[in-house]
Image 1 (spheres, rainbow, N blue to C red):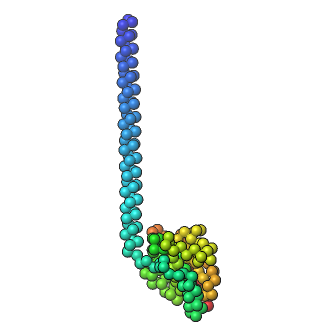
Image 2: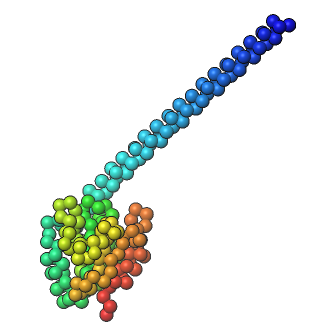
Image 3: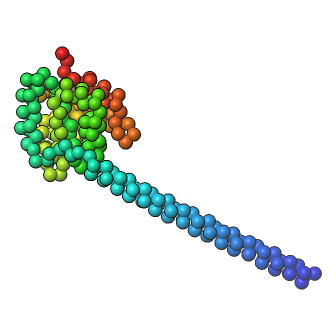
Length: 196
């Protein structure tokens, strides 16, 4: 009887040990699969990020580059103020640079949307105020409260015909998807046009 009990105990121990071992093997396999999936997700994320960077670079290469980092912005704005007084227009300073895809997108959007281009042409003198490593125009930006530090780029500074700053516009509220909202941009331009 003891011999039979010993055999049953031995078989039971063997079953429990093999069950535990197979369970351990399953855990290792699950972890390996989870790890493989993590690597796949990470490599997919990296590939997606790289594809987005390439697409953005291609888009940026095609867009016009309206910013001039060599221009004396202070002198140009003084010149625009004289012109604005003569033409009874306000001035929009679109601060940013040719490095900024959202700046280039905004410029392209306005230039290729007749409804917006008409509002701008009738009411404003438009200037692309450069901010880049080559020329930060620090003195000019300081004069307008360093709006890029607060809002990023592009940021818009609206001046009246006498060169007085009357509004600073964060561009983020004008965005829609990968571009800009026609209604919001139109409302911005209309609101800050010179009053007759």
